Length: 108
Image (cartoon, rainbow, N blue to C red; front, side, top):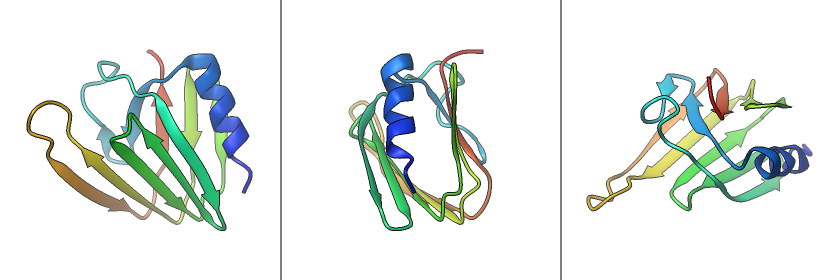
C-alpha cells in the first residue's frame, strides 16, 4: 500500500470534510467537518485518525481515490471504526465493517 500521499494531498487541498461510513453518515450530512490528525501504513493496514477522536483502521484496503470534494476508501477486507464523542459526555464506541466503502466529502 502507498495510500498515505494520496490522503495527505487531498486533505491539504480540501482541508477536511464530512464522514460517510458503509452504513451512512457519521453525524448530520455536511454538518460535521473532520480534519486529518495522522495517518499510518503498516503492512496490510492503513490507520487514519481524524480530529484526534475518530480512528479508521482499514485491513486489506484495495483503493483510495481522491477527487475534488471527495476522498473514497474501498473496497477493503475489514474496517474498524472507533470514536470518542464530542462535547461533555465523551461517549466512546466502535464498530466493524466487512464490506462497503468510506467517503470523506466536502460538500453536496
